[in-house]
Length: 416
Ligand SMILES: *Cc1c(COP(=O)(O)O)cnc(C)c1O
Ligand SMILES: [Zn+2]
Image 1 (cartoon, protein in one colour):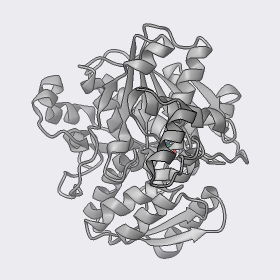
Image 2: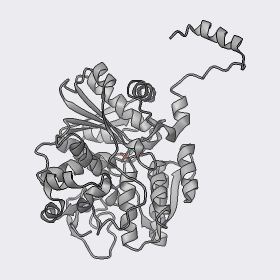
Image 3: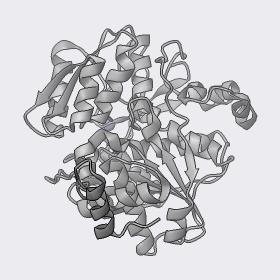
Image 4: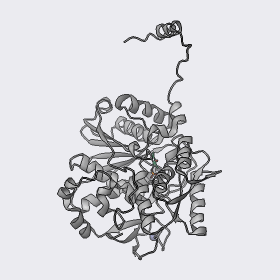
């Protein structure tokens, strides 16, 4: 926490000094989420500007250590987090009439989702505090990341997930050795139960947004985008939104770089939500107040009734001059195939939603053909095989007989 000055409430704007040894979750005045406030002068000195970063050979989230709320990198988990590939699109961009489209593949993180960025910082912070156990509620990915990064560091995890979480994510949790509590209820109910666990037992809590450091980890994606684009800022970034912690984190990252003088402009951010689970979109397009919706979507990672970092997400949209897009489950499944077949990327449904949102925004004339656009692919398709199977047809089944094969080839007219 050496470069942290304190916290500023996203809700009421009140500022709070950091108190050594005390874990700061929500705002003591209003209960809102907190934003970490840094001493940028100090950061500037240790980062050493563009040149300092260019010379830094650590290609992971830890290259941004001075910009993280930690004492150091002593408790970095042993796996490689961040600095995920940024691909320049060839086919999809051309199909959409975009000159410069990029795909950031965060499915390449160790637990196969963007959540490893948050997990990295939270786990390191918990260990710096000498914690022995971390609890967290999750639709699946936040938990599997926490489990992946904690176990290897000797940190115990207690996880609360809804009964509906995809199998692969549950399998990860169990293999990594978490205590997995499946809650008969929604993600939102699991979240509240996990808060009560912290009240009851004093366990260190990783809940998205409530723990102010999840946003700090997630902001590293923005840093990477700027560096990977050769110190150019994107014009527009498409982000799948559930709790709103990724989008507010990415915004924080661009703001940090702007304050440090590393970039001189900022992108528009686009929140892509399922039309069934669109509390952030509704708030942004109305009075800015987050109200729970009761929707449900096959894109489980963004299936959230009451976004837990919604206020910060709306602020990110407003400040960046961005907008929100709603997509249907059908559009998500089509986008999943589109990304796979044009770019070789396999996205889980929530990540495919960002691609669907891009397609929809382009169709609506909301993206200029010369804008430098980025779409965040936040999770790997293998995370939810059942979801993927809904996007495609059944395979053919034949006997191991060349006559059967011939029949099939003729019927289907497969030709080289
Ligand atoms: C968590 C998650 C999101 C949404 O992030 P929020 O911070 O909840 O808005 C999107 N995609 C994937 C794959 C996720 O795991
Ligand atoms: Zn407050």
